[in-house]
Image (cartoon, rainbow, N blue to C red; front, top):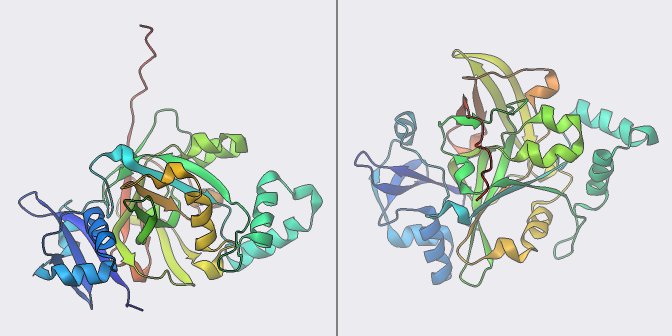
Length: 332
């Protein structure tokens, strides 16, 4: 099994797109590659792994990815020339949370009066979300976030619509996929993600989940190519005026989840709509750590920073301007 490595997309000082690979601690440009998608499609066509494809092309000039990020030249790590061919979706109620949260959850599950639809869905995941390899497990909660136009680059502001009641972070791991010419989905790797959502709207009524999820989000800056660590620990923090005003660790990886990654992937890609040849899928796997759960209220300019050691550079995005009200529908 190949050791993990990382990929990133960026623009050079001349504005041209490039792909950088971090192998054995060194970050260099991948010769002749201008996108991770094209790199993945070439690997699929050649019948080899991404690492072998990178090695076949060769590595060139050294890259200071941290400096490029500070200069605003790092792009989302996977995209498509036509953003409409990027499906951004996710699954919720998938994580077990902290020890304290798990204890409360088990008490709630034992109390029939607290078995809301959400708790019932969570219990289904506990009971059937980890099937044996090759077997189908229980369906998870699933939601749609948008297409590629909603995915912001690392460092770019996350716009919040004028009607939003909350602008809250969700520190997650996202699976990144490219569909081959026959429609078979191929996992490129995993990335840090901020599945930016409106939790106040959602908590009014769970049927508002769809409204709460139709927001921008961000992934990156780098893709971890290889297996996701089973026990992954990161940090989610919010900075205001350069000072940390909220901070908490988050747990993810299959040891901290009620579903396996394979089960979540299987229930997403069972729909042919998501297997169109050449399309890209960004799929968020869920979280159990939210600042809103601590009563924290975000505001414009707050910076969300999500980090976890295997993923290299942290993902940081500020809350941007409130988007203007939408235009009224005009009859023709």
